[in-house]
Amino acid sequence: MGPTTGSRFVYNRRRRGGRHAVEEASDEEEQRVDSSSSSSDEEGDEEEDAEASGEDIDDEEEEEAVAAEPAAKQSPAAAETGEKRGGRKGPISISLKKVCKVCKRTGHQAGFQGAVYIDCPMKPCFLCKMPGHTTLTCPHRVAMEHGVIPAPRRNTNTSLDYVFQSQVKGKISMVKPKFLIPNQLECGNIKFHQRRVTCLEFHPTKNNVLLSGDKKGLLGIWDYVKLHEKITYDSVHSCILNSMKIDTTNDGMVYTASSDGTISFTDLDTGIGSPLLNLNPNGWNGPSSWHMIYGMDLNTDKGLLLVADNFGFLYFLDRRSKTRIGHPILIHKKGSKVTSLHCNPARPEVLLSSGNDHYARIWDTRKLEANSPLASLAHGRVVNSGYFSPRSGNKILTTCQDNRIRVWDYILGDLQSPSREIVHSHDFNRHLTPFKAEWDPKDYTETVAVIGRYISENYNGVALHPIDFIDTSSGKLLAEVMDPDITTISPVNKLHPQDDILATGSSRSIFIWKPKTEDELTEERAKQKTKEYIYGSSSRKKANGKHGNSSGDDSDGDSGGKNKKAKTTRFTHAVKGKGKSKV
DNA sequence: AGACAATGTCACC
DNA sequence: TGGTGACCCTTGTC
Image (cartoon, rainbow, N blue to C red; front, side):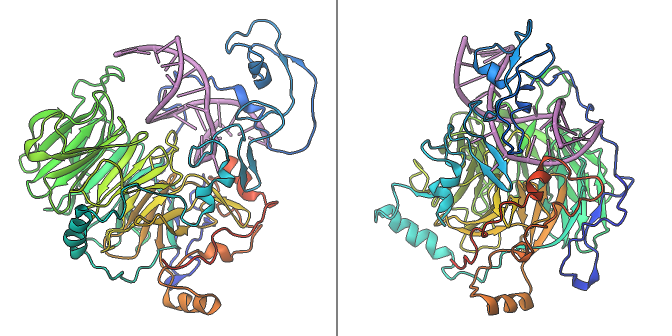
């Protein structure tokens, strides 16, 4: 992990002003992280399919049965023949016949072949979850729309539609502003964090300043124009930093919510903070009593900080007196995590909560009691996030682990079922920060949302996980933003409140994207017709094959399984989605 | 290059 | 209801 030695991660291919763009965490920030730092008492017992995951395709069929020692890997085949896990007495016969690592049957193999992932045909589609086809042939993947299911109650010409037309549409511009997709990697901060990035927030007044939090509780502050100006504070929280909010009355201060059960109010210049709330005053007494805070939002009208924990309760904090107000109120199923909170931008007393109980709920915080939501929006699985639309507050956008993004067009209307369900791959949650679709705060029409994609696509022989821009009014995929050097998944994405800038948190790194310049656009127009929306990224133009996973990696990093995918160049199909344009 | 751990949700008992 | 084990495209370290 040599510090930077000429990090070959030179990201500003465009060399604007010759800045060097990518830096690694500086020495003093870099701490040795040993993998046994957290309790290693849960010893891994997942030895099973190590063998089956072999990816080479040479066809040595069957090899000898072997007498295994108790500690040896248990053969999947043995597992299939009813050999009990853990019952490891005596010799076990192991057949090394190639089996599918997913279903343990022979005759097919799931896994990456080059940059293409071959599904196990025995499983339902990984994307839409329906049986009968695999991800590769899923209609939601093949269709340009990327999978929109129109809701039953669309365009019914009822009085509700009339209300919607007159009240809502009247307030929002029908003329789409010129909208550029920030699809060009401008710069990156590699391994700025010690653990995966969990949240990002642009500073509302200090231009070019990005705040970031990670799984260890580290708070990062980075000026991405002055690339070297970056600070991390590691004493603010002791574990996952789940949410951040800059104080609206003092923009030098930030509220942070963490799985350590505290809310901190921290000075951005000094890193010195005071705990506003500690839900674990008695320390660790086991997981059943440990409070974690995920959802947090500020009601600027009333000067209230709203906070919710992993047991389903909502807490109020008075911003000025820094004290708790009232009792905690149960807003989701008792014992279940509240994943996000959002105050309506137009009516701050209206709150949207999302939870692990498969519901998003709307509340009136002025008369809040348990079991008194204004509405409960049912979802198929855990709801990762829910947001009101950023201007009118009339729409709702939720991200659910059933691989669907749901949109409600009008909160005063019938909320029984969503106006739209958009199939989108984002259901992985175990080792990644949960994906959250977020509105573009600059979009007056309140249609564009951004969300990272879990499932990979083969781009010129490289398996990449794009960041998707989605038209929530139609379900259309507006743009897939990716770069061949970013081979990791990008679950955390934030659009700048004013500028055409996208910030991405991917693993431990942070990236900044900008739209192409006018010159580049002109050049591109000459080549192919490009309309209002700009698709694709430089990656398309890069020579295929060579790619380079993360740039031949920065001397310490991205080695491992992912590279296998990235380096393999056998499959170099045409790029998917090329030439898409316009909406 | 390959093993493995970290770790959230869900089905099942 | 609480415990347990399984889990399809991870990521980074050893």
